[in-house]
Length: 173
Figure 1 (cartoon, rainbow, N blue to C red):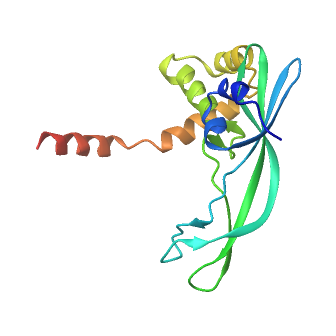
Figure 2: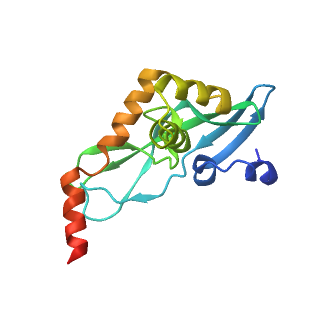
């Protein structure tokens, strides 16, 4: 099914821009966008010396929340495609094709996490206030405990104080 390119251009989240949109359904309260990964024919893998050819293995569909627009919740029905290959040791291996812009582990888009971190860290909002803001402004349903886990996961990706000091010292030289 062909998706209207003008309608598609209204959605700016990376999930829409970097994955294949197969359908858009609009109801009174929800916009549902069906996505699937763009599967490459070859992938670079750490267990292979050269890029390895893959073939489709299986798939599953999950529901991911995006930032709502004009009072409507945006939900992505995402077809997660697993691909398979045989590595250099002769072992059959599967992996999920990358889905840029989506945090499938959290069932939200990258922009939802960024917006939550903005309110929690930059604006110093409390967890309950951030839950309320996300629900009221963007129709994202989450909990205080989920936001706390997101915040912890994002903080773990940041460099330590020692690494920052070391980087600053290297810049001085």
